[in-house]
Length: 354
Image (cartoon, rainbow, N blue to C red; front, side, top):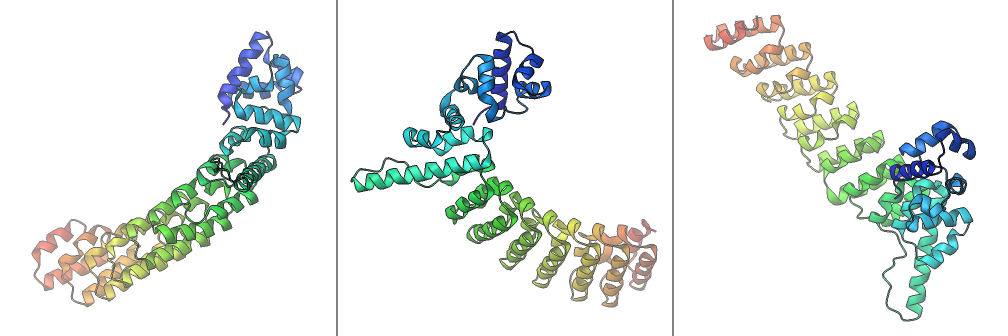
C-alpha cells in the first residue's frame, strides 16, 4: 500500500529540485497552497486525476512519483483507462491491487477486484481444459487478502465477498472487517462465528460495530451457553440495561452468586440491581454477597435487603460488609438486633459508622 508520508517526501524533494515554492506548485496544479502542504506532510494524497499533471510539473513519470511497483503501474493503467488489459496481461494479485486502493474510488477498486477474480477464474478454467497443473492463482479472494483492501471496496460487494468466505472467518479476523460492514451483515456474521467458536470474550472487539439488538441477542445466548459473568463483563458497556437486567436475573436464578454480578454491576440500572439483590436475599441468598454490589445499590434498596434478612433471623455479623453503605436508621436496627443477641463484637464494628 502506498505510504502517504513517503510520497509526500518525494513531492517535496522533487519540488525543491525544480526550485519551486509550495504556492508556485499550487498555482500550476490549480489547488490551494494548503493542499500542496498536506501532500508533502503526508496528511493527504493527490487525487488520481491530478497525478499526471503533478508528475509533469515535477518532471517525472506517474510511476516514479508513486515510487514504482505494481501498484504504481496499476494507477497509471487506471489513468490511461487500460486497467482491464493490464490485469489480463500482468497477472495482478489482490495485494498489489491493495497498494493502489487508497488513490482510487470505491467503485474503481471494486471493478479491479472483480476483474482480478474473473481473470484468475478464466486462467484456472483454461489450465484445467488443457490438463495443466494449477498455477497457484486462486479465482477467489481469501480473508487475509481481503482485510487490507476492505476499506476501499464498495460496501455491498465487500459484504458479498465476506459472506462467500463464511463460515470460518473467525471473530478475530471479522473484527478487522467490522468497521466496513453494515450492522445487519455484521450481526449475522457475528452470530454465526460465535456459535462456531463460542468465545464470548472475542465479541468485545466487534461489539462497538454491532446493532443494539444484535449484541443483546448474542449476550443472552451466551448466558444460555453458560458463559461466565467475567466474560460477559467485556461486552457489558455495549449492552442495553434491559438485556443486562435479564442476564443478571438469569444468572442468580440459575445458582450464580449475587457477588458474581459485581463485574457487570456498574452497567446495570440501579433499580434493576436492587430488585435482583432483594429477590436473592428473600430466596435465601447470602447477605454477605450483597456487599460486592453494595457500591452500586441505592441506600433504600440496601435498607430493604437488611430488613428482609433480619426478618429471617440472619446473624448480624453477616451484614458487616454492608455497614459503610447503610443508612443511620438501618444501622440502629442492627444495633438493636445485636443487643438482643448480646453480640458485642458486632456492636463495636457498627459504632464506627454511627
